[in-house]
Image (tube, rainbow, N blue to C red; front, side, top):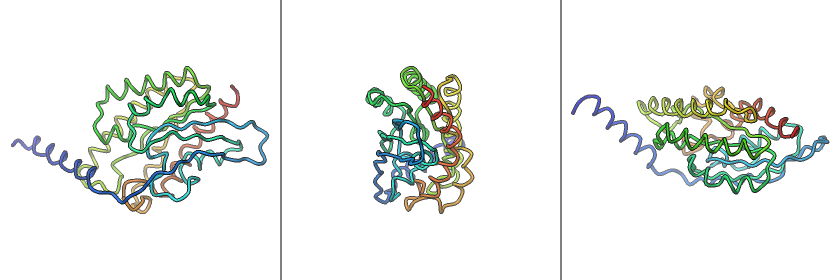
Length: 239
């Protein structure tokens, strides 16, 4: 067997081991509910969240610690928050929930998807096509849209070397697609979670499954997302 083929086979085997290895049972949280801002005179905004387990916080005990709710709570605005996120979702799964999300008549939709596409090998072209269709429909029907990019999946604590390099590359590919698509829309803001990548080099920011972020990881994402989220909320208020 050629060295390159052998390495590819080894990496594929590691990937299957990482993804199929039994995880501690961790159920995501339904983060839907009101986010109060007692001193605000702004009208409440309806926010709908679409995406994967980054928005459901498996392993967390309190919905307020999930990064998107934590970031929204920093803004002086009351929110009616509706989460339609489902753990394990890929872009095709999110697309199937899009019409239902728009029927909620949101002021702002937040999308966080792509990590599972990176992990499970969705081809770049297929991901871009589906993601661009999703963002295009949202931009045409919702006053304001915010999209999170994808952090460095090579930092996931349960992933062994050299598979870390493969996942780092895969996440960069998907991240570049997300950023390129978002850049084409004036009413869509980027939530750049990659600025917090360095935080995830510490195993302590992961839950017991060494896969999902713990409270500290979500706090880092919340801080990173805040500038883009602030812009998206301002646009929603202005609409």
